[in-house]
Amino acid sequence: MSQNLFPDTPFLHGLTYMPGFALGEEAELVRVVLAVVKAAPFRRMKTPGGKEMSAAMTNCGVTGWVSDAKGYRYARRDPLSGEPWPEMPDIFRSLAARAAAVGGFAGFVPDVALINRYEPGAKMTLHQDVDEQDFSAPIVSVSLGLPAFFLWGGPRRTDKPARLFLESGDVLVWGGAARKFFHGVAPVKQGVHRLTGAARLNLTFRQAL
Ligand code: SIN
Ligand code: FE2
Image 1 (tube, rainbow, N blue to C red):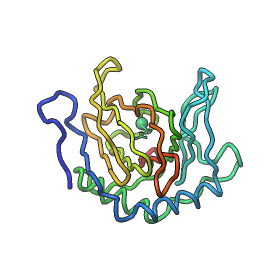
Image 2 (image 1 turned 90 degrees about the vertical axis):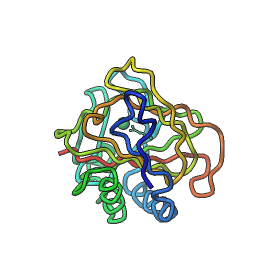
Image 3 (image 1 turned 90 degrees about the horizontal axis):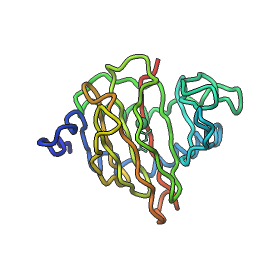
């Protein structure tokens, strides 16, 4: 179920690719996302520079990742509603813990799932996940719906990223030396997926607090 990608290339150590790891749960995961979105709808956040991100986002868990003119940060309440984010569903916590364990990080307890929705054309430019307080916990990333190329870079923004084709049910885990490596998503191609329609969903599990 797990393989170390391209072991001879410099920056792929620390990334565990688990094709189809969540395939048996994908329909339920999508249903649970729709339930979260009823309470905390997808929205396109603005970067600190004032640009609207092309992926729409929401969160569940005890905190949530947010971005606006004041910067990137975690907030315990949804700025749209002023309410706490929806609770992390058990199926999310359990999947994240099982995947992390396979990736070498037993005992992972995520306190947030950032949920991204990419419509065709949407992308995520190369970035680091560095707003969390403790980098000893890994990142667990679950893809659902339309496929996309994941861009896996290195410790520097200028490191040329590898392209990894992610399909619905695929899971990635990265941590340790790779925890702060640059990564992103190439523009999602037009398409229709039986579970999500014209969209790709990504769940990013983190221990933020
Ligand atoms: C992210 O890095 O926040 C999203 C990654 C993805 O959508 O696969
Ligand atoms: Fe990220």
